[in-house]
Length: 139
Image (cartoon, rainbow, N blue to C red):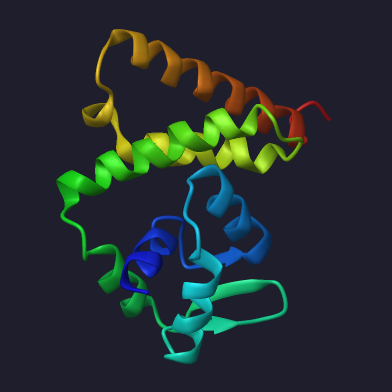
């Protein structure tokens, strides 16, 4: 449960359960939903119809801080890269946007070489174009 709520905390205070199921597949996190249900039973998370959220911001903060900062950068980067790859097979644009956000949370310190830097730039470009398409900037 501890590891699962850390993973959950990397994506914010609240997630739709459908996205949690996407994480299970894209990041190969078998049992994530089940563990989050256990966290609900323990009072760490609250359950609404289609969302899970931390019952208090301090719980999210504590869960997030179970991993040292220098490792969290790499975790965010790995999540972002895996989600970006997964997004190419999905029609849900929010996966690409979340992937770019995770990569950016990892920051430049997580990028391993110039080739990966180009990949990250491409993901951010695609996410930016999607965000522009989804917005009302053209109106």
